[in-house]
Amino acid sequence: MIIEPNFNSVQQLYNNIEFYNQLAKQKENKALAEALQISETEALYIKKVSIESFSDQTQRIKQFSQFISELDSISQRKVDYEDYLENFNNINAKFHKIEIEAISSVVAKRCQKAIVTSIENNEYFRLQKEINDRNIALKDSVIDKQQEEINDLQVFYKKIKIIEAQKPDGTTSINLAENQPDQISEIELLNQARKLKDEKIELNNEKANTKNTINIISEFPNKGALVNDFLKKKVVILPIVSITVLFLALILILLNKYLMNYSK
Image 1: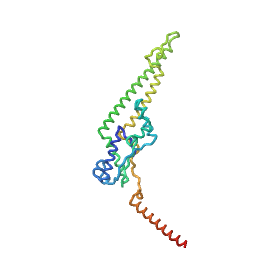
Image 2 (image 1 turned 45 degrees about the vertical axis):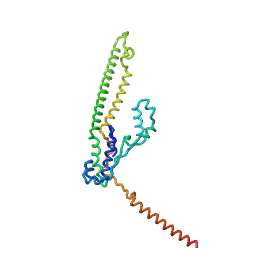
Image 3 (image 1 turned 135 degrees about the vertical axis):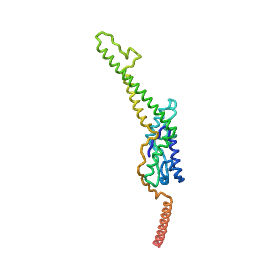
């Protein structure tokens, strides 16, 4: 399962996965069943639970750019990409991969909900999500209010133009943008409207990305894939290697005797 943790919940997620893995190793089926909300029989099937970062060079560059943008100008000059990579670890990655090894092909899917809700039901992360939702709602309302004000000003400018166009020749015309510095020019209004539109798009993306404490990018499959690691086990490899070496030694001995007899 590929996930994206939010609100700095990745450390707690790693701790939870390690806890599940230790229970599986120690055959604590009852405790593991309670933690993953499955039956004790299904818990018995689980052999290993692991998690690792899932990132590539492109993702790391994006994260570095975001990290730099949050620093002041003095700190930015002191940090380069190589320094960032040296301190980059699993916790810094944006995406993470959770794997479950079991003798049942369907038990991983049954564990998915419990793994996610163990983070979402955490009081601290729940509070962080509520605060984030409120901040996004506040930013959204501010942007909407600013867009309304800009629309009203644009309508006002259009009315002024119509009035000025209807005046007889020789009548003094007032240019709001040039003669009144307190007023905003139409070009500035257009630029501000475009800026607010970009902020709205960025805010909508943030709203979608932080909708959940744990974003599931790719779920556990309904049925796991068979991993045939029989030949990788030492109990199989060592005898095979020993027999092969012995066989080659016998061949060399027989070959040596043949060559000696042939030379005679």
